[in-house]
Length: 238
Length: 377
Image 1 (cartoon, rainbow over the protein chains, first blue to last red):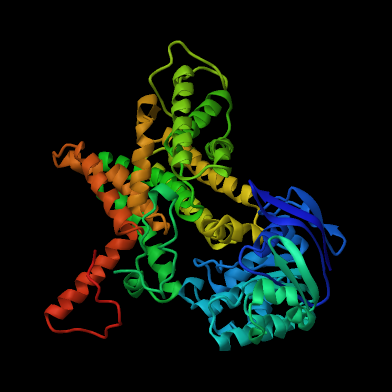
Image 2: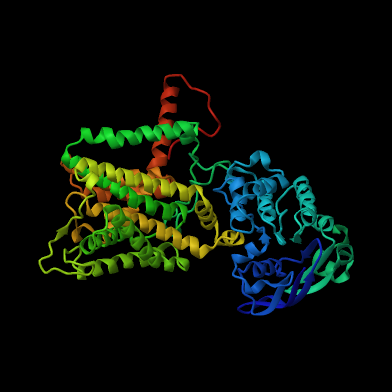
């Protein structure tokens, strides 16, 4: 459960988030909107990369914005990046280990936790390969493995399917659907692929010019007139 | 050999921005040369080390023994700077002066206390490490050229302090000053290593410890954190890495090594004097470290050979050591443009290429892999 209250971000004269108030709860929530709507800025505020000028974010009752940026990972915040950021110089195993050793959990279960996360995304055969030698789809999976290791509470996925072919996107969708139940984390999914959003998210919120223009169950939101006009363009895409 | 998609990116990892080589080089050839099994590699290393410690001194006269001793000591400094540049992705131009700080602290403690030699060296390392971390503070905000400039200025500042304090000076007590203080001071060697050969072995042992310390860092949690930082600060923070801590720790570690090397240098033949530490040597140090190669620990040894052995060899052959400035200039150009892995990475690769060409020439072309035939740059 993430409660966002009056969140405003300003870069000079640009206001990517304008008094955004929103509650994300239960399982997987979609966050959609046209380019520049403020989706990634919202994620960057949650990660601590961008400081808002006003507003508050509470996640499971904790004041997220009061924590130092790197401590949010230990609290249980995970994210993937729009341009995938799996660490090229490290093996798949070490990529996941990096997150695990800097977050919650004792050393005793460390190795097993990492293997479980690698197994979760189906990269076990590649565990010892350098990420730099993997293809785009597998790197995306490494990012997901990094996001589910070490008892996460909130997992932010920023266009995880960008640039992936349809069958890889479907595989990714199946993984994302398993996260809330198996990892027990709240997932927030940003993507332009409406079939992925509909397949994964029970509820969806729509941003446009930094403001929330609709939210509700995914099916309802995707039928909303304002949403179709602002973003989707044609009904056929739904 | 040009970059292809499936190569490990270690070699292509970005240097601090103004030094960026920009181009990735496939390490397939070097991997083919490396022993497959880790055990074999360890055995080869141990054998090489045994030769260096026990075989080599017998083959050298006093002068060359001093030279290789200083190669060993300086390899600890280049190791630290190589870690800082290649692993943590930051640059420092004050490591050479931190070597002087290490020597100074060890000497002053020697005048002031009766602590045993290993403790002196350890304290020299720790004190220098703390000073290095303080100098590294700007690295939290600055990078590349500006960080280089700040650290170079710090090097200049250290020189001023050392001149005012009449480094190394033999007065009593930690801050003691003797009007009759000689130009050069030497630390007493440990009882087990008073002779030149024994002291050389002592230095080798300390260097081995430092290389193991470096290896432990690179393979462990700090190495993974640095790899994340090198790629992007955002991805490191998102993984829960305390960026401030690991940046400063990299500076502290590199400076600790410089300090330990300084302690060893203070007890080497001839001791230390202030003229040994001109500021411009910091730039020379950076040059040899880049040429040796910052992405593997072996590069530190190559760098130390370039820094200490090459000038002595040129001198011995009657060639002016001024030539080094030109040689190093060309070498740096080569590294930045075509061989970011440095000599330690490039030479085996070039040899492998040469071998393949020779085999082809005599018509014995072995099994070839795609992409191996790209001409060397």
